[in-house]
Amino acid sequence: MKTLIGIKAGSREKTAEFLSAILADEFILYTKTRNAHWNVEGADFHAMHLFFESQYTELETVIDEVAERIRQIGHYAPATLKEYLALTHLTEARRGGNDSMSFIKDLLNDHDTIIKHIRENINTIEEELDYGTSDFVTGIMMLHEKQAWMLRAHIK
Image (cartoon, rainbow, N blue to C red; front, top):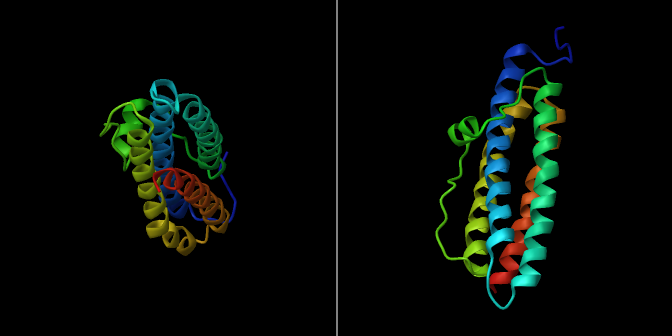
């Protein structure tokens, strides 16, 4: 059945591509945050183990919501690691050890990358008259700004 929600097919296609890249970024960041949760070491292990858990739990919700938004606009969500690696703006490579500061700096860089990508492209979605997705993606950006703030607060 056709998706008749007042947004042209070509516009929904552009939005689906944008959301698919966000989904890929979210999944890669989720995996890296899980890695931090599982593998962090040091005197602050327990606190950081719980902190990283709170962050990946929020990301898990975002992943599901992004995939569902792609479906709501009439497209299929990418759902393989191969697709995610082809679509992401992030790298799955790590730059540090298993101490909390190394994980924090790496994850912070990824959050900042996602924030910048969304901020640079959100006008495109508004130009396509998809205000629902624009509002939705703004909320995602704000979640990343909050998580980045929490990570950044550990560095000072």
